[in-house]
Length: 121
Length: 492
Image 1: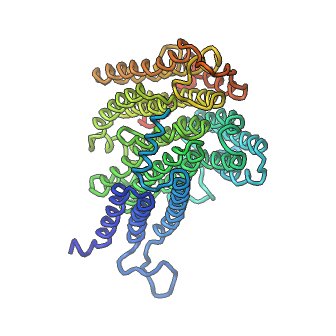
Image 2 (image 1 turned 180 degrees about the vertical axis):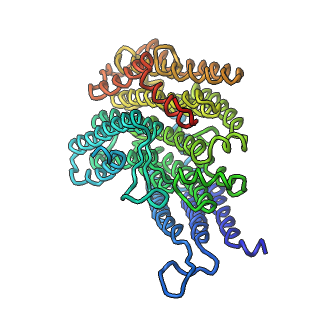
């Protein structure tokens, strides 16, 4: 019962850890951003599922409905989604510029090139 | 008009940022941005006066009452932070026009000022608001524009630094978002004052512990507490000089503010320091940070790197003062926020002047600059002395109060280690002084001219402030004392 009743949290935590792991473990800059997006999305799901009230309907006034879900977390997360999009867009734009100037989007190759420049100066 | 000061502080730079695009001429945009930030500076002085004379200002957005609507709440701590950010932001911006002429291509100038105003808006917002979700939104506004500002750097390593900062910063902000979500789940409110009331009933639950942990780790990522500081050195070193001077003086300070606000106001001192072993963790991390970062600074060859590592060490001092958890300790932290902003903006602006003249801030290039750029180098020397904590500079004042706080609570080993840490600062400052003054000018380089006055004026304004507030401490100590006492609930 504990496990099934709280299934939304299990999904959230699993997605969160998957995303976090990808950010840390992968050397490809695009994959890192994908991981970051999954990580953020898990938090969105957490907020959205939190707003649900047992047997509550959608928060629209209607006759014969006494119980409504809480709309506030949904509104909050709309803002957070916009922020997430901006972050991903900026991240991808940076990757494009990195590719142009380093010719690679692999973390270790960039670090090797940086080391070479550092040794020269 | 006077009643609307809290919102004007945030909304004026926010509206001004897109307006920059209509002007679209480098010099015009610069004057406009300077005017806007001078306005915010004046505004924050008025706010500070109001707060000091008549207590906390509460401003309700759109006239909605507090737990439902968003409120801005300005007490002594907020007003102090607003003053630090706006005044440093204005003084640094004064040199921007000259500096970015050499460091950025012409078509990016407008973009630079827009981003600068957006970044400063985000910081004002974080500090003014009394709503935790609002904090997250403003945090992302200021961070996203900071990533873009760093990526404007000339060196390609700026891109890589901005990318790393983006990843780390987003993880930190998302952690804060998780913490806020958990708090909302337990209390059903987002208002800080309301949260503080309602948390008392539920603060022994695991959900609140988790919320606390997420918030603290998220904020510590943002304030570059050792060992979460890895994004900072390169971001500071390769960003355009003006951006470095601005961010070094403000970004980490805002995060320290958040840490203080969350632990003291939202969770309460009792919960933060008694229920959980926060004090020991922070004192140890602060001390390790001071020693590790100062030692790293000694071996760096890029002067911007040296001062970036020194910033991490200075964050260590702030955290120790905070973790001592007495009114004096917190006061030392607040003083150091103010003083460190003065030192680092002066130092990084002086490095901007060097960058302007010789196009590099490698230590080896500094040879002979002591005679060729005497005023700029003198500023670095005074700033460095302040960093070490020599009497008659601001650095001495905050370290003095920090030592007093440590000794008062009987933490003698901490006091001794703080002093030893300052000795390390002497070493890295001396390396710069030695190269600039006691080595012959580089052969084959034409004589370097002194920096233009648009650089010297703001640099020396900041340097003189370093000395002034080191001698006449009435203003800074009074405000810091009032802020720390109100956080501890002591009535003066």
